Image (cartoon, rainbow, N blue to C red):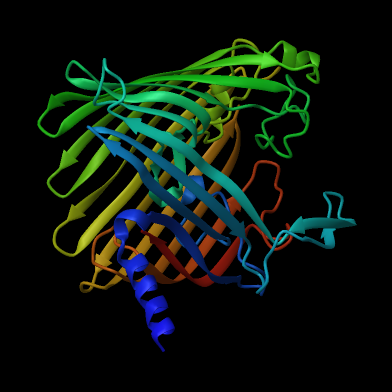
Amino acid sequence: MRKVSLIAAAVATAVTATSAFAVDFNGYMRAGVGVSADGGQQVTFQKNKIGRLGNEGDIYGEVQLGKEVYNNDGKTFYVDSMLAMTSNGSNDWEGTAANCGLATNDSGGDIVKCANDAEFALRQLNVRAQGVLDFAPEATLWAGKRYYQRRDIHISDLYYWNISGAGAGIEGIEAGPGQLSLAWVRNDRNDNFKLGENNNGDTPDTGNEGSAVNVNTLDARYAGIPLWENGSLEVGINYALVHDTDAASQAAKDAKNGVMLTSELTQGLADGFNKTVFQYGTEGYSKSFAFYGDGSWYGAEAKSGASGYRLINWGVVGLGDDWELGHQLLYGVGEEMWDGQDKWKAMSAVMRPVYKWNQNSKTIFEAGYSVDDNDGNKDKYGKFTVAQAWSAGSSFWARPEIRLYASYLNSDKADNSKSFDNRTSDDSLQFGVQVEAWW
């Protein structure tokens, strides 16, 4: 018995020694079950454009573990890590083994298609040090792979300024009224398409075959510029340095460096905030604004001389004691991105009003509408969702949140192609239950 007591005491001592074992545990997750009216699996359809509520058919999670490993005389070192997982949530055991089955190709024929039930990714692995730079002790020196000052609109899961990846930098240097941050990050571009042709439908880094274009992104930001009461400005510049590899096509070898300029005006409100963003880009950055990109991929295949710009207004505001409203308004343009292309205009509006019944119960509505206008050829998408939700608090941002929802999705494409029910229908009705949480 004495031996058991000694073991129990040792375990108790280890558990209570928080200074030795304390680890920061953070993360994000969404999961649930959904079905379309025809009995098929719920789809995720154009959520960056028409909103994500009742329009996410995946299971997704991020687990972040970090620890301060050194703290001496005002100098600290912090190690951070994050793993992510995604799947379609269609079965119990979802792993990385290939799952093969029949699928339909563009011609209507059956093909064998293999995919993993789930995918795992290393999203962050970095070290951040503070107090180690004599010329700027307040600044953070960092290196590794990380989410770098990402800017997103939550209701549409749209990232509009984000160069996350492997890199290094110094952030938070006090300079005048604001703070200066400098970074260098790799955002390589694949060459599994022929650069310079009409690749508007290309998915960045699909398969990463060839890895023909190395892109080094240089980032400089100046934040916290005071303007007026509760108003501040941040400005930044990204410069994409393109270097082709031996595997590159000739078009890839001809790819040009590009510049992206961003300004973000933030206005604090009595009950909420509003942000207005303007971005301008040259060469490969033109595609970011036409196709809802964020700067983390560089459209090196864009024709030399391409340019674009984007204007965004978004925010969340309280409307009395019982209502809150989140919104997204976006207008983006890409010009001369490939031969014969003049102007691609992207327009989106999403509104999410929330009515709070009490501290833990709310009803959420979300309406979204978008237009992709390619030289007069317009693809139009729409969505309306109603959801009953139960959350850990009444705030718009309160999580965890469990939602019971119904969504109507609509598609009107210029080529008259269909988007739903195996490409046989222009609209779809979806029902489901979802939980979303961060901690």
